[in-house]
Image 1 (tube, rainbow, N blue to C red):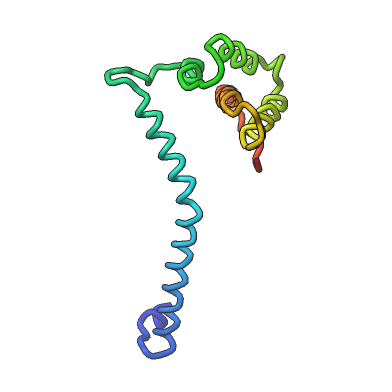
Image 2: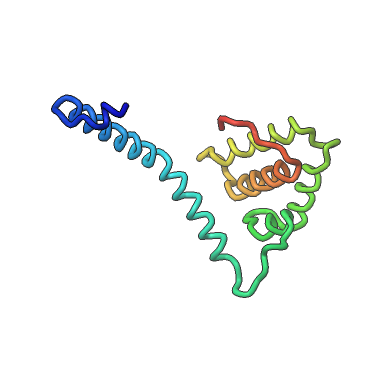
Length: 141
C-alpha cells in the first residue's frame, strides 16, 4: 500500500484518478437517492414548527394531543377513541396493529381514494400507537 501511494508514475497515477472519480461518482449517486427523502422530511419538520404558536410549550404534549393537533379530517373524540383502541393489546394484537398501519398507508398512497385526509389521520394514529407500544411497522410499503 505504501508503494502504491508513493508511486507517481503513469499507470498508478491514472488508476488513482479513476478510483477517485469512481468514489466521487458513488457519493453523488448516493446523495441523489437520499436527497428527496431528506427534503420531504425537512419540509414536514418545517411545517410542524411553523404551526407552533410563539411561546407555546409543545415538549410536554402527549402523543394523543399531538394527533389531535395535526388531524385534518377527524375530530378529537374520534381520534381519542381510535388511539385508545389501538393501545389495547386485547383489541389490537401486535400483528393486527401492524397490518392496520400497512392497510391505511396503502389507502393513503392510493390516488383514487376519496378521503385522503381521513387516511392520513389513520396512518398517524396507527404510527403513534406502534411507537407507544414499541413496535416497528411492516417494511416494504
